Every structure is written in C-alpha cells, then in structure tokens.
Image (cartoon, rainbow, N blue to C red; front, side, top):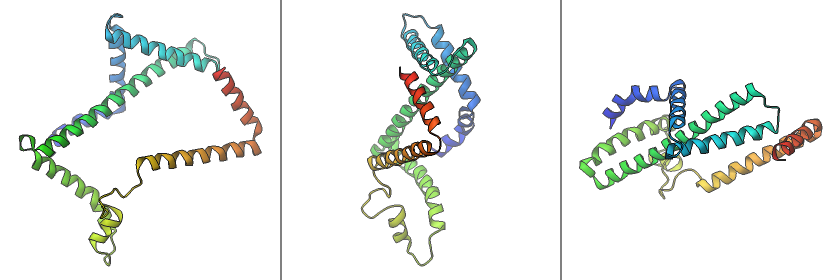
Length: 203
C-alpha cells in the first residue's frame, strides 16, 4: 500500500491542482453537450441546462441581469454544478473503495491483511505521535490515551454525529439571531433592504 501511494503521489498532486480540476470540469461539460439528446448523457445535459437556467432566472429577480452578466452566470453555475457533482461522485467512490479495502483486510483476501494493517498502523502512529509529544511525564501513557485518544469503553473521544450537527445548528442559529439583533439596533435600513431582496427573490 505504501509503494502504491508513493508511486501515485505525483498523479494525486496533479489531480488536486485547481486548474487541472477546472479543465476536467470543462471537458466534461463539452462532452455532455456533444452527446445526442436522446442518449442518457444528452438528457443529463438537458437537465443540467434547465437547472442552470432556473438559477440564473432566480438571480435575475434579485438584480438586473443583462447579456454579459447572464453569460458569466450561466458559465459559472454550469461549472459549479458539474464540479459539485464530480466531488460527490469521487466521495462516493472513496467510500466504496475504503469499504472494499476494509472487507479485503477483514477476510484476508489474497493475504492482504498484514499489508493493509501495516500501512494503517503507520498512519495511526503518525497521527498519535503529536499527542504523545505533549504528554506530561507524570501521566502514564495508557491513562493519557484513554483520556484523549482511545477510551477504555472503545467509544470515540468525540460526541456522536447527531449531537455535533445539533450543536453546530444551534451555534449558527444563535450567531444569526445576534447579527439580526445588531442590525435591528444599529442599521435597521440594512435589514429592511435584505427583507426586500428576499421578497423579490421568492416573489
């Protein structure tokens, strides 16, 4: 696994470069546009075109959109939607690939368990080393790890996902209410202007 990562490092560096990603997205858009309307890819492009057009029309209700602005909005939203779709596809592929590697290691497929375990052990050690460097000398390593890294009950040392999502939603809601209250006190005209923009966007 380490050898594969070492050999694929230059490729991953190029793929992560933003300009390369932009070129790939533009190539995908041109490829979808060139497809026949009756084909699957042609229908995908038609749906994408309708979505972009609806988004541009939504923005045209908020501010004046002329030919130059419309062309830029159309191109920008087209690239943004395709880029987002590519990110979701890559994320799904990464989850599937990770699950396949886990299954291979658990079932020892083609005797790959030791290789996978060694590679992940190296990653775990590199992630654990910064925590170990700040451990006080009077605290045993086991106690330190149980407190901050690997609790004795084998549960993660962070709250569940649901609790984290609720905490984040509550935090952002509180910040939004504080901003609205400050605008109401110090700049009521700005709040009224935002209300008018919202009515224009949804009206």
